Image 1 (cartoon, rainbow, N blue to C red):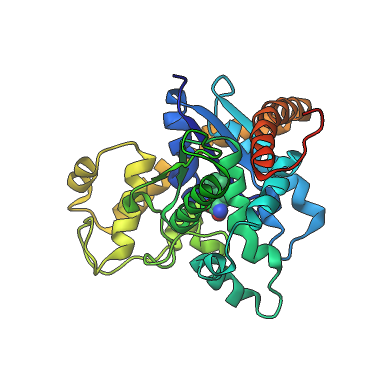
Image 2 (tube, rainbow, N blue to C red):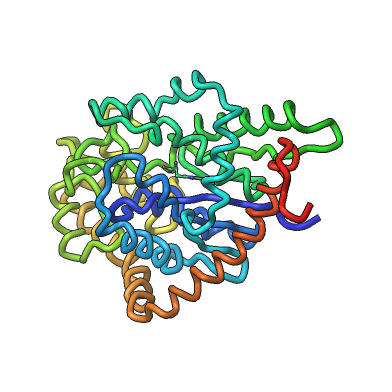
Length: 337
Ligand code: TRP
């Protein structure tokens, strides 16, 4: 038996922030040696809401560079761009034709995003989860490490795979591998700096609500200085009355690689005036090596080109084999078959 397959992805919309890094990418990095990994930049997903064509390619490369800067290791992981593998869009079409419309209409994220788009809701926005299912199923992924907010999309992916297997497979000829969700614990969620009850998010209009991975030390200092706190002295985890306190302690915990007990003890008697500089220094120190590596990567565009070209070749081979398997099972004639 080979190593389990892992697939995950991030959309190339704007700058990655600490929530993306601590909640997703750092976990990919930490567990990458136990699996064979495919990490994609899901640029086809980025056009499901109105987008700026002049920055799409640049943002896509920036995310790929950040994967590398955060420590994704090419000896066990493949980094690639979704739109460069045509099997994603093709499988999405085939899956569209077996997915009941009402499965998509009840997706929470669709409903939330559709409200924000007002009149301008594309078919692509509704279809987003089917494309995501194609991303996952093409690679026979065993595990899909994502945040809590993607849970419903993963359940849908499983349901679609089971439906394809049921309609077109047999008991001993399974067509699509049904993946295990690898939802991380809610505790690993990074919340907004301006509201401890809301997730840190790229779509929050306020820059002050998040720390971008590429923020300068000055920006980090300013954001932590102004972030929301409370008038209570002494810091503690898990007090529902103090969501900001719990969030900032949690951030300090993961950025400094300590246990919750150690942080709880260290900060129990602190006031905000003492804690904020500590968190600031820790955040700056944690991000510094990533930022340095990121700059090195961008200084050598030829290197990133090579990484993405190799990634495309490797991903394409796996994806095309799965696509052909599905097409054959659905009764299409394949060239040369
Ligand atoms: N929908 C995911 C998100 O917003 C991004 C994504 C697209 C994804 N395709 C995927 C994540 C496949 C994991 C696997 O976070």
